[in-house]
Amino acid sequence: MGWTDERVEQLKSLWTEGLSASQIARTLGGVTRNAVIGKVHRLGLAGRAVPARIDRPRLPSAPRVTIRTHHVPEPPVVEEDPITLDDGSHATVLTINDRMCRWPIGDPSENEFHFCGRKPKVGSPYCEAHARKAYQPQQPRRDKGRMAS
Image (cartoon, rainbow, N blue to C red; front, top):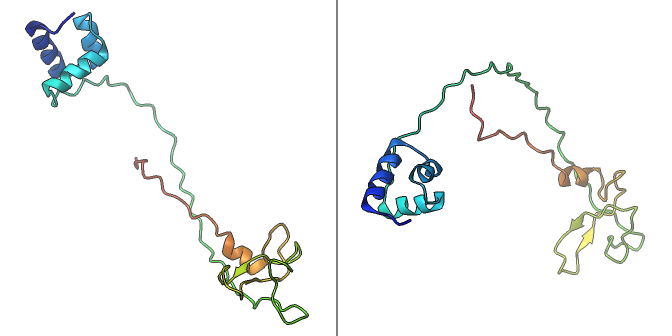
């Protein structure tokens, strides 16, 4: 079924009354919701009435519990100098093992690049100081989408 002048006028009227595209399609018959949306777009019908809201009684919400935690600052990270091997050099890719801190020091493309080499923290590839540096605690997030009641 095509868009006659009469159907276009009916579409405009229903649109300004605030009916949805689906409701208009059902009222007009013979057109789909997408056809209505396309026609509205082509006609440039931007403004429209806000559909009437059905006022439902609001259920009381649970009281909000605000949990305030006191931030206890972590003690400062004190990095120690990397270990020096028996031959006077530092731990490198060739000398590092699983019982040594694998924190990289320097630029990997340079000859002076090496690793910390200290004893690693249990369950970590890094010593205590480097593990604290690598694994920062996540900061609490504030939900931007939630509105205060």
